[in-house]
Length: 260
Image (tube, rainbow, N blue to C red; front, side, top):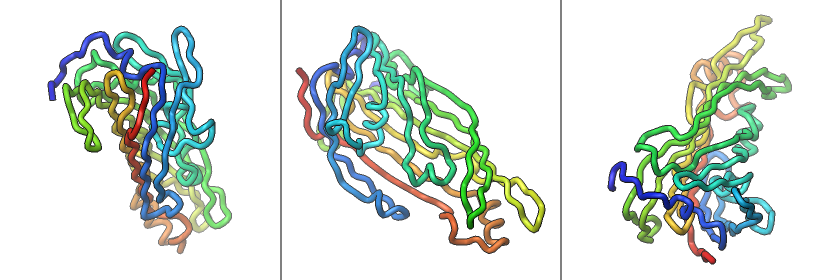
């Protein structure tokens, strides 16, 4: 760990604009059995322009890894000190069905900034949205506040990841933090209750290696309903309609690559 050392004007090489990358993807969830799987993602350059490039995966079919899904969602921009993305952040269908949002379109998401200090927020966007969730055939209005941010965690001269030693590694974090309220009708009276206390609905820890690209990403997704909401659901005898919590863990590890 070299603290806040700046590796110089080499960040344009942290994601080479030619070649391919193959990742082992491992997803696990005790709550959602369909998200227990192992898979492979093949990532490659789709288009390259003067100031940006784009990626595709698996012959334009579904991308299994969360970070790779984000990276292939739009256009990537290199500068001497940064890597940024115009794209969209997508939640699993199971979470979207809970009224917790779907796709978040984003512009200028800084994923890598070698000049930032450890712990600095590189990108921040907040906002609010409304949705509904169906409980026993009744559509419950949900008001959601969210914050999407990326943070520089560290820069390493050398680090071992998945049994491989890499040099000049940038570690960052991508987070989607949310809070939500829902409006229920209880015994004929309308009542607004906290649906979710502020929490990270998605948290990805990612690593870019100089001259290689993304080498590892670890993602946690899920939520825990507020005690206020679970108490209300118990009061009106709705205990099995929606889960009180969901947890999904996934890892993307680079297994093979070729840089032209």
